[in-house]
Length: 174
Image (tube, rainbow, N blue to C red; front, side, top):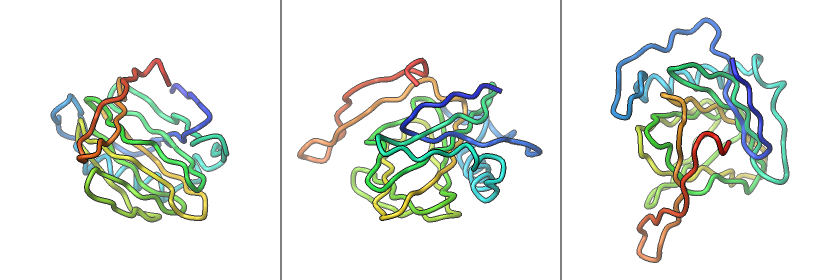
């Protein structure tokens, strides 16, 4: 298992004792988004395996990859009030995140959804969102991606509400 940490965003938890096999999805994901959400929710509800790793960083989201194999990876992310991802996608990876502590908001170009502790969101490849902690308290979330992230694109929203790509990142950047 590879563990990487970077100040600014949390990472995934252990996969002890749980099968994650599923069906192949567009983008090469061996796990369908609902299965990824189930796995993220399981991990978020059992923080004893990863909570000791979490750090709160006033400079930006903290994150740590807690599991990676050929099929998927898991990250744990901590969020102080006001921290956000900015609009981004996950390249060819499907994904899901579940809130373990606190609450987050998921922003799409024309929609906002609150995600509270124990709740999860899942998505397919090329899904664009901005996840934010708009509450007054810290939050912690668990993220599962399949296949493991290889690229991400960052976006802005123009005056007409259209996404404009700003940058592209590869896994080596994290």
